[in-house]
Image (tube, rainbow, N blue to C red; front, side):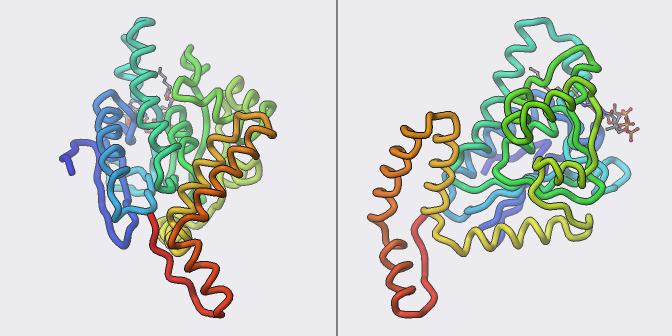
Length: 267
Ligand code: CO8
C-alpha cells in the first residue's frame, strides 16, 4: 500500500478502517486528500483481505475524536477557484466518491461529528451510514454562494426525497443525528463511545454472509436504481443466474438442507 499524508488505514479481520486525518482543518477535503483517497480506495478495491471498508474522520487538533467526520471541502483552497478550476475539483472528487459507491466491498461511513457540505456528501457515497449521537449533517454551500458539488444535489434527494433535500440545501440548516435518522439519511445513531464498535459489528455481520453474493447484490441495487423497473428486474435475473454458479450457493443451500452452518468463502 502507498503511504498517505492525510489518511490512516488499518486493516484487521477483513475490515479496513480508513480515517481522513487533517486535524488542522477538521478533515476538510482538499485536492491532495481527494487524490490520496482515490489511490487508497483503488488499492483497497483489489485486496481480498478487505471485505468491508469503514470510513471515518480523525480527531481535531486538540485530540477530540468526536468533533468532526469531514467539515466539507476545503474552503481555503476553493476560495480562489474560477469556473474551470472548480469543475476540475468536482471531477477529481467524483472518482473516489464513485469508488466508495461502486467498489465490490461494502462501505460504511462512521460519522463522528460534523458532516457538512462535502462531508455529508462523502458519507452519502457510502453504502451505509452509522452516526454518533453528536453528529451534525448539513449542506451549507448556498450560504457560501456555491452549490453542493460533490454529488449532494443528487444523492441527498435520492436518499431523503426531493422536498427534504431542497429544504436542507436551500436553507443551509444543519440537522442533528436523530433528525438524520428520522428522515432516512443515516441507518443508525449510537452513543459516540459505541460508534466504531457498532460499525464493526455491522461489518462482521455482513462479512459472515456470502461476500460474493453481497457484492453482486450491491451492484444490482446500484445499477438498477436509475433504470426502469422492467429492465432493472431483468438485470437482477441475469445477476441471479451468475450467483447460482458459485461455491457459496452450493454450500449455503446444502448447509441449510443438512441443518448445519454454511462455510461461505467466495469473494
Ligand atoms: N475548509 C477549510 N478549513 C476548515 C473547514 C473547511 N471546510 N472547516 C473547518 N476548517 C478549519 C477552520 O478554518 C479552523 O482552522 P484554524 O484553526 O486554522 O482557524 C479549524 O478548521 C477549526 O475550525 P473552527 O475554528 O471553525 O471550529 P469551530 O468548532 O468553531 O466550528 C464548524 C466548527 C462549525 C464545522 C466550522 O469550522 C465550519 O463552519 N466549517 C465550515 C463548514 C462548511 O461550510 N462546510 C462546507 C464547505 S463547502 C463544501 O463542502 C462544498 C463541497 C462541494 C464542492 C464542489 C466543488 C466542485
